[in-house]
Length: 306
Ligand code: PBG
Image 1 (tube, rainbow, N blue to C red):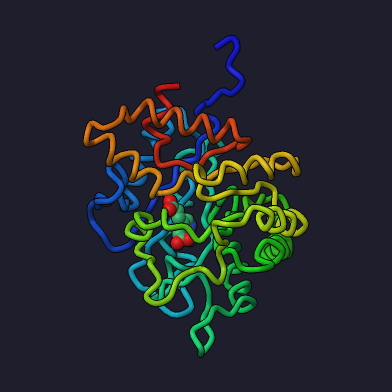
Image 2: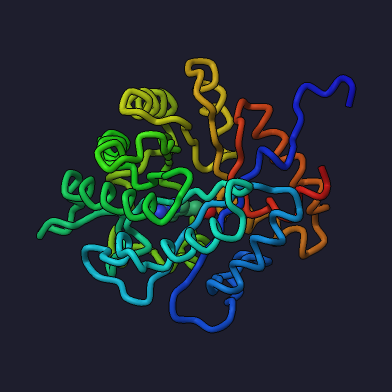
């Protein structure tokens, strides 16, 4: 330990959580062993367990009962995520950082991250208004940080402006700045029930071949007011994390995504790898590349090992 150049601690970890409206019991997600779609009640217990394991940050994803073209439940004052935020802040106050994903795919019936034009393409600027409204609803419910994940141009600026106009001048933004159109999001789309019903997300997410473009995306987000910048997924993009680290002073978050978790779990369950050892190796590598924070479904199980 004396000569370790990189240290992983529970303070680095953010646990992603799913909360679903209209279910009476937590539902296991087949492609993500150990991860559940929670009821408000089971979420409360899960977060207690996470906090007891030493992790103090969570990010919430909501699955509403009713989905429509505009994703109207996303900014509804009684939307499932808004209820979850209020409950968790009630339970934990300032001891828990409650981050909220600000996007539309969990809320729209077509599963895309934005409002669609008649030709079925995403309308970037109409979507920004929705993201701004969702951010305000989440802030009013008590969120500690807003995390826009839709990759629409101008989303950070639009959300910053809306938060400032509504008195939330101190609320930080963690921007999904370099989010790739990855095949590693499959299990998340089962969990959040948000796979696009047609097409894909390549018109708004980045292509895997590009690193310089990530620097441009980060620069735009930082200029618009991003406080923390994110790279997603993590392990296939360590060079991107490193390149951003070398150019920007902002804290970097890396999202170890659902597919990365699923691959690790599948191999471990088959006895093909030592799951705990590989988990620690992977998360340490993400920090070594330059990330300060890691969003990972491994948070609760890894924290006691540190
Ligand atoms: C979009 C969003 C996605 C993830 C986080 N936010 C899915 C997507 O872009 O299709 C994926 C996270 C994961 O795979 O763990 N709201």
